[in-house]
Amino acid sequence: MKKIIFSLLVALSSVSAVQAADANAGKEKSVTCSACHGPTGVSASPMFPNLAGQNDAYIIKQLKDFKSGARTDAMMAPMAANLSEADMADLAAHFSGLPSANEQAAASASTGSSTDAAPVSAPAAGNVEIVASTPASAIYAGNVAAGKDKALACAACHGADGNSLVPMYPSLAGQSANYIAKQLADFKSGDRNDPVMAGMVAALSKEDMNDLAAFFAVQSKNAGTGESNEVGHKLYIGGDADKGVTACIACHGVAGKGMKQAGFPSITGQSKDYLKKQLASFRDGSRGNDNNGIMRNIAIKLSDADIEAVAQYITSLK
Ligand code: HEC
Ligand code: HEC
Ligand code: HEC
Image (tube, rainbow, N blue to C red):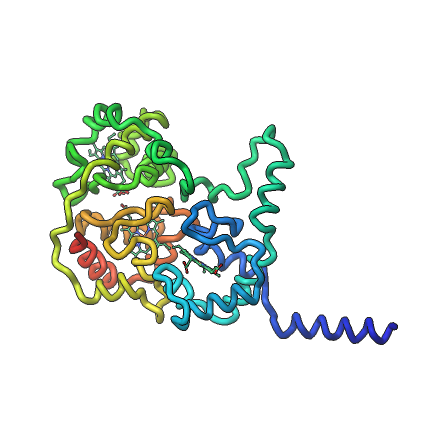
């Protein structure tokens, strides 16, 4: 009997030695994944699968397939491209060890609604405000007509219809409402620093922010008029595997329109000056309001020449 237990233990320890997967390391590596798959592996958007409680061997196989191209997905390909086998094993150990979506829902139900704790599947820090099955009226939580009146104060810089004529000032037209509302809240809290905008938002209530966001979100944005750039195009659609830069297309989309549900902004129709300034600010950390450092982690790997090229390319997106 002792002998059996002993050999079982040896077998078990050698299994874990072979896998050598580290769930804690996986947790750290999963920061980039959480924007889409949720911080607890439960996605808040119907477009992204849950990973919590999934079998680890299955997760590893999918990641390998995304990397090799055996399974194709425009979002997952660049995510998997930079993962080593050890990364995949660590990530799989992390996600497979998390309670499943049902278990997480049951746990939050049984802790009762009297606590003010956020539901387990709430996006981290409320930054990536994923709207899931929320009806359109709730996505545009604000009132467009009220927003129009309030937007008079913004017109001098952002344009009456949200299309800015001055390169320093970003266009807001057609931007996702949740992204605009988040930026306004971040300027107010100081998570995003800009002396001009800090003054503009100081007196805005949450309702004002939602109304303004709703108004600008339904304006149509002018198409980009810049010239394309070959190096920038390559970086945008393919990333840079050597430097570990995720392709911009994964989150900002083929046409730069972003992904409203995931909180990824539209970046079309912006001036090259504005784009360069934002990328440089993410790179040096002076803009640090991106959830989980999602943009800082990318920008830190970009050279000045990369920023110049990719910003030029983005101005050509229609
Ligand atoms: C930009 C959004 C996005 C990010 C970031 C992202 N994923 Fe995904 N992931 C997706 C989408 C979309 C799918 C579904 C692909 C499909 O439809 O085939 C997916 C599918 C998967 C699957 C397959 C699940 C299944 O049930 O078949 C795994 C595993 C996975 N992702 C792991 C990861 C890991 C690990 C990371 C971080 C390194 C990550 N993903 C980052 C969007 C994303
Ligand atoms: C005096 C000029 C000025 C006025 C007026 C102004 N803004 Fe801005 N706004 C700016 C500048 C400059 C930035 C870019 C800050 C940076 O570089 O990070 C900006 C950025 C923004 C952003 C972030 C855009 C993005 O793509 O991330 C939002 C949202 C915004 N402003 C909304 C508003 C709203 C709403 C009003 C009116 C209540 C307003 N602004 C009034 C100058 C102005
Ligand atoms: C994994 C997803 C992801 C990838 C990949 C990604 N971004 Fe972003 N990007 C974001 C998010 C999220 C934000 C908004 C952060 C915030 O909440 O302020 C953002 C913001 C930006 C902004 C600022 C927009 C504005 O209006 O101020 C620019 C410019 C930008 N990204 C360019 C790029 C470029 C260029 C690449 C490729 C080199 C890239 N991004 C890759 C997710 C991503």
